[in-house]
Amino acid sequence: MKILVVDDEPDFRAMLREWLFRQGHDAQDVSDERKVLETLQQSHYDLVTLDLMMPQANGLTLVSQIRSVSPKTRIIVLSGAADVRVAVEVIKAGAQACMAKPVEFEAFRDELTRLKHTLGLNSSVPGRSVVSDVATS
Amino acid sequence: MVTATDNQSAATYVRRLEHLLDASRLLNSTLELSELTEIVLRIVQDEIPVDRCTLFVVDRKQKLLRSFIAQGVEEFEITLPMGEGLGGYAAATGEPLDIEDAYADERFQPKFDEQFGYTTKDALCLPVFNCDGAIVGVLQLLNRTRPLNREDKEFLSSMCTYLGLALQNAWVHRELVQSRRAEEELRLIRDRLAQAEKVSAMNELVAGIIHEMKNPLAVAIGYCSLMEEEGPTVPLTERIGKVKTAVAQALKVAKNFLNFARPAGQRVPTDVNSLVTQTTDLLTYDFRSQRIKLIGELEDLPLTWVDPGNIQQVLLNLLKNAQQAAGERGGTIWVRSSHDSERSTVRIEISDDGPGIPAEAQSRIFEPFFTTKPSGSGTGLGLAVSKRIIEAHWGKLAFKSTPGQGTTFTIDLPVHQPTL
Image (tube, rainbow over all chains, first blue to last red; front, top):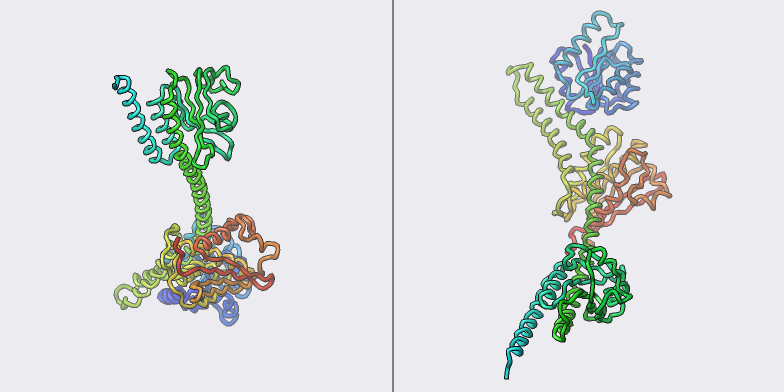
């Protein structure tokens, strides 16, 4: 899959890009949420992993904007601020999954595999929504 | 010729002199009114043939007489208004009273008899003066078992002279202790408020701190996961280095928070700049998530004698206020430090480019529980506590705010604390 990693932490970006590469994906990264739409307009990505700083309206807006700019691109939110409320909000806004940081890599890999199959089988059908390892408080 | 009676009275005289000397020594040995009263009552009881003995102390502020322990009525404080009763009369007039039949005297108040199931027959009330001639107490003796002779009265008169000085000292001491206790209580309440403010600040920080720890931990876990998958075929040194850096970063965040959480302690020579950095580090997540730009201009500072926990509490409070003000525009916060070597002070300035403090609020911002923040955010104690902490360090906390242009808070601290 072609994946765009969006995170403002360079160390995390570098690590995730390398990890995705080892899983056989083609990963690029951007540091700024504002550059996401620009990058997506230039080239197609199967998946965007998005770090939402806070459960802020602009984060949710970004999820909707990605969906409208590039409807076939799937979105997984990876966030340190993830809890059930945030997860519900981001999935309502159109994300495929919401996973808490630090990421459980096995669950993440499973999710990527599932997504790959979904995309390969029928790209117009949205995948199953997944909430993984988010705090229930 | 010396008779047996002469011998006996000489022996009594010597014993009484000894007792008076003892009395003067004992009366100077304590500043506690109850102890003093006990000593007086014991000595008088040994020497004077009376059934009950009470020492009243004059409370001038409340125009009362108080007896801390009346003989036979232990640990019961009797109060008597000045001028009332036999003791009150002696205290008000300064005249001694020697009454043979109390119930025949209109000044006598039988209510204490009724209260304690006692019957007063005769009474002797001796006013006690301090060295300035003011009445400080009344010694009251009830129901003598034999008529009092001249020696008895001389003994009592000498007793009252010693007693005057001792009572004066004890009373001053008592008032001092009470005012110290009130001060101590006030200090305790203030400390608790400061602690409550700090706990509230800590609660607000926790979410950001945890987030700040999750990022490096995510990096560490990621590299561990990679190493796991790759096995020993790939050189591990670089990966292990990255894990170590990430874990150290998480640890630093945790340590920084724990440093802030430490209770207020002692003043030690401190690098105030490092307190500034530690405090802005605590707010990294909050600033980043609100896209606040932080500009630090820190001059070298001499080690400054402060309580680091306290000063960090002030810095955090001012930075949070600046964040709240600047945050409305995703603005900028400046932190500057400087040293005035002539006045031997250090200065920390925290500025924001927010909307400024409304003119009508400016005179009230240091009042406890005054807040311009929406209800539920902040205790309203932040600035009141901060001002008190800075003033307790002999420093000054001031601000300048122009509506529409932002606010600057200035902390001035002496490098050395004055010795008291």
